[in-house]
Image (cartoon, rainbow, N blue to C red; front, top):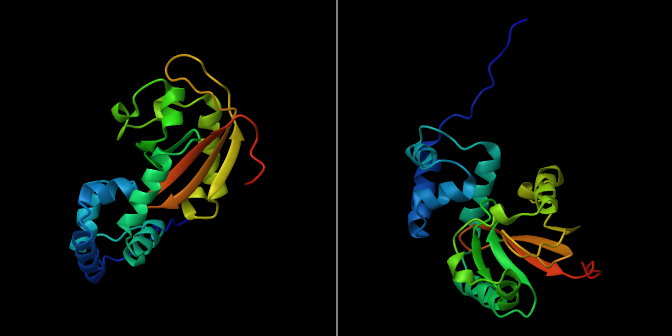
Length: 195
């Protein structure tokens, strides 16, 4: 039996030029774009130089980012609404789980100053139920925009590594103006019936 190698997409210098131009106009560093797309900075550099082409899923994400109108005012409004919410809510980057902002109610639950957690991954604090829900996202098509919310039950934890008082968690996925996929995480004492 003869095995045929899978063909890789041919390099595209024009795409690379447009990507570099968009990234610079949008003031997004290669390393930031690489982080958003789950690749290395060297990979983004190869795309821009036209020596390599993104995989179809990455290409689609880049295309969405390049054609989406940036609205920094909306981004700031979202962060302000999260920060001042009376609910236990926080906003993270969808893939890295890095904290972007949290409400005062969430900080009270966590019993810590959230500024020390900003920019760091919250993954190390996940309960077993959160880890299981995270694994289910692939099958739901979460990262392919086939699903944008998930509600699940989780266990409470009163001690280390972080206090969690939620009985139910709602995840909602959307994009910031720079193309970053984010996850709004809201905690409930009872199963939400409005979703």
